Amino acid sequence: MPETSNHGKRAVLYVRLSKEDLHKISEGDESASIKNQRLMLTDYALAMGYQITDVYSDDDESGLYENRPGFERMMEDARLGKFDLVIAKSQSRFSRNMEHIEKYLHHDFPLLGIRFIGVADNADTENAGNKKARQINGLVNEWYCEDLSDNIRSVFKAKMKAGQFLGSSCPYGYRKDPENHNHLLVDAYAASIVRRIFALYLEGYGKSKIAAMLSAEGVLIPTRYKQEVLGIAYSNSKLLPQTKAWSYQTIHTILGNPVYTGTLVQNKYNKLSYKDKRKKRMPEESWIIAENTHEPIIDKHTFALVQELSGQRTKAVHTVPNGLFSGKLFCADCKKSMERQYARRGERGFIGYVCKTYKKQGKQFCESHKILKEELERAVYSSLKDEVMNILTDSDKQELRQFATADLHRDSTSEQIEILRSQMEKIQKYKKGAFEKYLDNVIMEVEYRQYMEQYDRQLMELEHHMRALSQISDGGRQDVMTETMDKLDRRVILELIDKIEVAVDGSLTIYYKFHHP
Image (tube, rainbow, N blue to C red; front, side, top):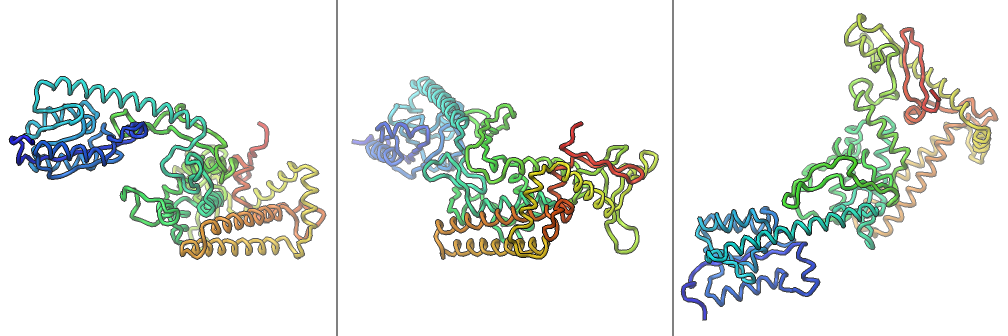
């Protein structure tokens, strides 16, 4: 029979389950489950004659923290005086943090007139005699969490060193292998966007400009793509940005992420302690780096070029933005970067470059080093042609000649390049069309990925032909090296030139990366 003294007392049930308890269920302790905790507590409350007014539940929430949804709601109702008693399976269900045991069970609850009962471990705040036992149990529970945290961290580090991906969400451009969630697979469509971002940046487009281009084209930002196309659900709606526009920071993050070279960099952040969810950035020597863990989207050489360019842009962003010579052009005397010079009258606009020191501080600090845009481009173009001829071997030249006389059936190299460019534009349209059909459920995911892989292969082949064509002469003449390039190319400048210095008389000194000091 229920105790008559309990009649009318308002009781609430609190149930909790977290990852730290899952191994108990697998070992046969089904009472740990949310469902069975609730049944146990309901039977107890009814047998004791309590009136159950509410049930608070936290699934997949650690007992170390206060910010559990069910727990927070329960404490809010406690302060509103909505119940007289909290019943849990044990004190550890309520909390595994000794600090919280003291705060709530031994301080707040007594002030609010609320009693706590742990059915399985006989914890009862109304019984002053078992307070020390509750405190000892609180310490044991906290030690258990600390040991468990250390063990989990060791296992995670071992997996990281073995090249296993442990992130909850894949980087844009990849998806988790359905047969091994610690392995990354290339996502064909998103990977094509990543390649395009790297290509645009090397062509001289700034990060904000690239973001604006993708937004104008309606390309889904990474979080929206994962949710709307890949079907990844975000339990926390706060993780979804309100804007649908690409941002500078998103482009910056993609361009700086070595994961696209097939390299995993993990253990960059760790929790402050097992009792604190906040994270701190680890020193670089603590990072765990594993190479060749998955298929790369960007080759390492291209990635290195982008990192070099990004560092130069950071320093030169206010001097020569988005130009062929950004981060490469300097005064021969003061060694400062050269800034753009604009015509004072008329509509000529940008006409050349001038020493930054001279422009900002006057001739008492440096002389007027100037050079016209056209003169600079002609001089660098001519020098590059000569250098290319010097570094190419006879076999390289023979290969170019053979390609020049191949069966392309066109009158000039420029016409061939235009045809290839037109073909590439068509393939980009095909890719966009396939993506729209996939979103409209016209084609299946398997078909969509096959289309993307086929289109990406075709684009790579066309790009290879275009690069080769830029190194042969018009009409495939035997003197193929006399016209190595049609025009200056930003990527060629990045790859071959370390820096260019402009003397006071306008003469240039070009420092090539492949020259020995």
